[in-house]
Length: 247
Image (cartoon, rainbow, N blue to C red; front, side):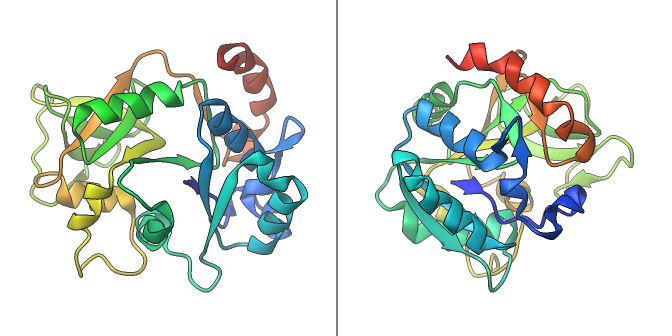
């Protein structure tokens, strides 16, 4: 599933007339870069959620014959549901018992998506989050077994979940990549209190004591968030660097 429903407010005025997913990066819309990366990794069926200028995404996919893939649209044009609500709404489109990979539309990386998916299959996790040692203010916190336990904002010292107590010696700090793999077993934790619009990260942090939520860790991940103007300018150079890695 590709998250393509965001408003793209950080990229205004570019997103005043188009969805963030269709903002060009090195001559191609960011959505196309992610679709082609998923296709190269062996994925044949995609779910894409839409909201802001959603009809432009539908037209773009049609004009490109869905890039030879089976693509389902999860339509959030009536109400933007955030990441957790978006996954829950799309549940009927996934079908079967196979895990599915989630990828933010504004993330470019050199990660091996098939290796991440295979790692998840062997892990027994309800969800596996790709995470790396990257400088940021906000970190996911994992125990020595690689299980998600909490979150911290180093600038404000805010922690989640509510009862979590941060201990630097007890937890490993990793930055989330915006890429994760989820097994259908995770949906059993999305009970009636998880309705409508909610963040998947809030859901993970509230359920990490019950659900088996693990990390797939790497020190070699090259990643860029192209949802910000300052990184959009650097993206072309980044793509030229990572193309040999993807081949």
